[in-house]
Amino acid sequence: MDIHTSNIQNLVIIESEKFKDDRGWFQESYNYNEFNKLGINGEFVQDNLVYSKINVLRGLHFQKNDSQGKLISCIKGKIFDVAVDLRPESDTYKNWVGYSLSENDSRFIYIPEGFAHGYSVESNEALVHYKCTRHYNSDSEIGIIWNDPDINISWPKDNYILSDKDKNNIRFKELAI
Image 1: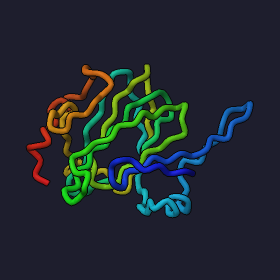
Image 2 (image 1 turned 60 degrees about the vertical axis):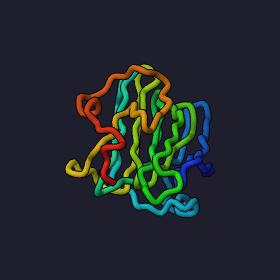
Image 3 (image 1 turned 90 degrees about the vertical axis):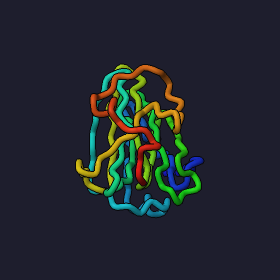
Image 4 (image 1 turned 180 degrees about the vertical axis):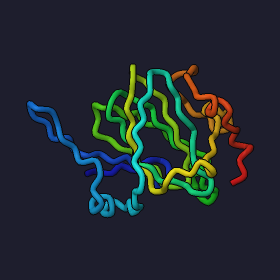
């Protein structure tokens, strides 16, 4: 496994080799020992699998009191994955990064605790897998509106399909962090 840093402190891109032959391919998606060598020491306690259709945008979600670290991959289709640094003590506070992930690459994104996360589906359909360092807590869930001008994310499109909940996410300036 190879690790690549991003311009956001502690957020990394991990590449895991795909071993291909005439039957298909094999890829190691998580190895406790290897991740520890890479400096990712969180314990994953929950896995999520999400299916979405083209032009769906999910996010920007986070848990205010029970922040989750996430290891994200796209196992079918293509997504544009975004993380926003919500750690007030961080040098990259309020900065965002976005990466394309697809079934054709071998990339994972590790987003540490303290980030809002979202993604848009850029293919006909997508299957996204992510591991979390804490269990989901609906009482702690909160969201920032995807097109907040104070964050100014450069999404690939301007028009997305959102859940009613995501349509009503708050602005960054309304957060009390």
